[in-house]
Image (cartoon, rainbow, N blue to C red; front, side, top):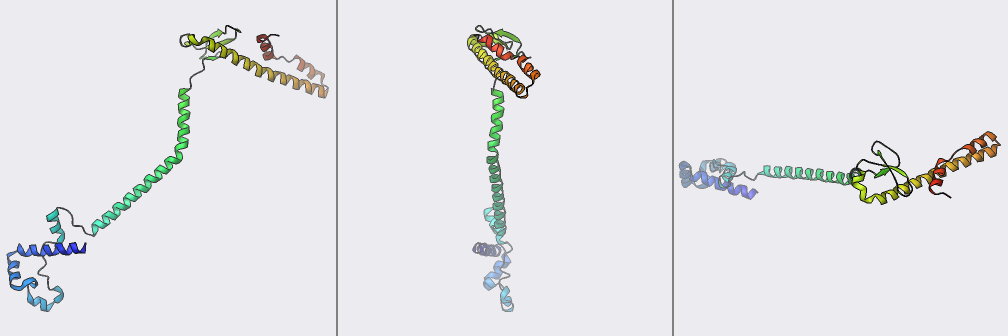
Length: 220
């Protein structure tokens, strides 16, 4: 870079002499020193008159139409490199945060998708605002409720649906019957343990409706 500066400086001086008639005349008479008296008076400033009116920066711009590559370029390059590094660091931090949050975002997305994809049940064993139409299975005459568009959508799959109704109904009866009998037996055990005749009679009178309904479905 120093060599380039001196090169353009020398070219600039030559251009200033050739373009100025008076300076060209002095150069022809005295040579590069231009004025001998100044050479003997001040050796350190011997080439002052030789210095051209055009700076190396201006000459560079004349030839190349751009800024002379001085130290400002180095500073700009350093600043640009620092900004690029900072931008890269910020991008990497953002990607790291995104990877850390990815599992949580995936779970939320799956939850939302499942809520949209899961459809309503075809039937209900209890009457609700949505399931208003009552039907009964052909085999066990188990009542169940469907939506208003049931006949149109599931007419061809009715047998499979009725089997599912009976299985669910019987499963609920068995679970409820087990709880009812367990509660009654515990009450009888406490009555015998404490010799409480009233509690014993209350336990004996306790009904088990689920067990009774299960008996109706499977008599014998």
